[in-house]
Image: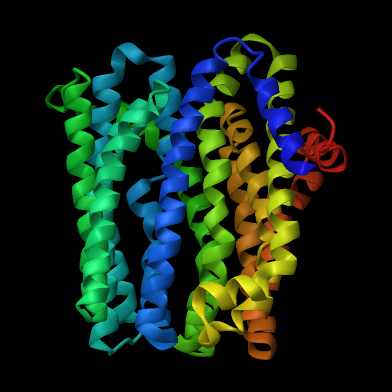
Length: 440
């Protein structure tokens, strides 16, 4: 029923001019995410079984710790840059060149901050420090994602998808080889870094094949100031979002131990694997929403409402069956050692409803120039998440962390909009979409 409604919602988008390209672009993004989802799930589960709960928890602790500093290398630029390229395509060399160098410098800064932070917190375990250092270096090579932003702005994501998936598939084969040769934990960190190095090379080749040259990119101080001025709230918002997504694992590691992180990470891996869906849809639909804002306010809000209802339908289609099948899924995939992850998954999966809603409204905040408002509500949710983790983790461990995540996500993506006059119209659209998701 819900999947049928979702398909009806998606077909509605096709009636709008120019959305044939959007559907094609989304299809490529879906193919990319489905391939990654399938391969990552199989290999990720294999790695989890191979490493065991303790080492798997340690690796995920390091990943979560490093991810907290990813806004330093992304600088909140992605959506802002896409919008600037669409508006000023003749100035693309300056926009792309400036974005690349900002991201590159941000990547260096993120390494220094991540390593400095883990040392500042008094960590003395050499393996954990090395894991954080290697995984943090990934941020430097993520500067090449600038090329992907260009393809995204032109609704030509297939070129980025092909380039990055070649790297992903090669990397997956290397991970399998590591498991078969009984490689140590540190080797999996190095191969994670290697994937982003290969992706960077692949994106540069794809850009050149399309007839463009990154040698023409130019740095512009004025463009840098403009981009950073717009993205600054998104940087802090990114920190807040990552607190939602990762602080639970870090707090579990600090308050309970690496084993509990391993159990919780198994549940989160299954729960969050679906987040590619709104990401792929929103990244393809966002340019048409920005364009509609310039032409017609009614069409603009109509598209936002359609996007919300579509993503709510999809999130419910995922959450309902996963709730009842959680124990079986964990047992089949991860084995007896991770059985405690079943109840956690049954609860955490409902976070997807509010994650999907939040991603659906992100183009609205950018189009309205209200990034600072988005920052305020995500910070509120992040602080709430930390407080709830402090209260719930000591008593309920991973289950408490899952409950804290749902409540804080609901507050940031939905409830906070009701208490600000600037976002009350959006809240009304969200409420209507939630209550009438089955109508289009």
